[in-house]
Length: 468
Image (cartoon, rainbow, N blue to C red; front, top):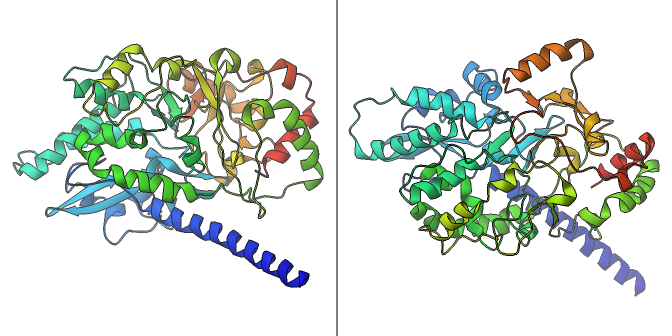
C-alpha cells in the first residue's frame, strides 16, 4: 500500500513538473507572436512601407538576406529561426501595416540563447525612430486615403518623439520611459517639456511579473501594480489613444496573468561547479538575502515567484534619474488624465527607491542595475570606482560576448581601450559610458557585506546564482 502511495505521489509530481514546462512553452509561443494592433492603433510604421521590407513579407526570408541582417545589426532586433522577433505585417483595410509587438523589447538573447521575456540587450529605439521618421516624411506623399492618413500621422508622431534627442535614450539596450510620459502632456493638450529627463532603463524581464505587480510595475515601484494599464505604457504612447487602451485592457489582463504568469526563467546553459554552490548559497544568505529575499522552489525545482522589496534611495544609492521622473507635475497629469480612473500611481508617503529584484535567471539579465550600468555579476560586488567605465553593448546577447567566470559582458582589451573611450565620449551608441546622463554605475555596494568578500567568495556566490 505504501509503495502504491509513493508511486502515485511520484507520478503526480512528475505530471505537475511537465505541466509547468508545457505552460511555459505555450506562453512563450503566444508571447513571441503577440501584438496589440487594433482598429488602426498600435506601434506601427506608415502603411504599405512594410511590403518593401523583406522580413515583413508573408514569405519571410532567411537571416542571410541583406535587409534582415541590416535591421538586426543596426537596430538590435533579435533574429530567431530566420525571423525578426516582435516585427509583424498586418493586413488592414487593404493596407500592409508594419507593427511592433511586445517581443521587440521584451525577448532577447544571453550567451547566444534566445529567451522569451528577457529584456532585449541590443534594441536601439532612437535609431529606429530617427530612421523611420526620415523615410516616412516622404513616404506616401499626397496619399489622401483617410485610413492611411490616420495610421501615418500616429506613426510619424511615434518616430518623432522616439528620436527626440532631448528625451531619447543615449545607448542601445536602454529604453526611455520619458516617451511614455509624453502621452499625458498630449492628453492635456500641452507640449511636453524638453527638460523632463530621459528616465533610461533596460527593458525589464517578465517572468514573475504576476507577483511583481503586488509591489508595482516598474523598477522604482512608483506606478501602481494594481493597474494592469501601465503594462501597456509603450503602446499607449505609440498609438496616442486612451480608447485603444480601454479596448484592449481585457487582453492585457489575460496576457499578464495567464501568459506572462507562466513564463519560467532560463536555465544556465553551461557547466556549474556544484561543489561551490552550497558555499555560495551560504555567502549569499549573509550578504544579499536581506534585500533580495529567499528564492524557494517547488518540489520539482521550479521557482516560487514572490514580490520584490523596494529599497530606499539612501540605502541602494544607485543613479536617481529614473526616480526623479516621477515628479509632482507628472503625478497630477496622470491623475487628471482621460485614463485617470484606470491608472494608479503611488506618491503619498512613498519613500523613493528601487526594487531589489528577485534573482531568478539572473545569469541572463546582464548588464545589471535598472540602468544597465554594471557589466557583470562580479562587478556588482566590488567598489564602484573599480567597475568598468565603458563596455560594448554591440551583439551583447551573443555567446562570444558572454563572460562565463564573471557572468556578464566581456570587456574591451587593453590595447583598444583608449580608442573606445574616445568613441564613447563622442557619443558612440554601441558603447556604454557611465558619464552619460542617467548611466552612473554608483551604488549597490555595502561595505559591511561586500567589503569582507574575497575574490573566491564572489565567484562562489556567482556559482550559486547560476542555479537560480
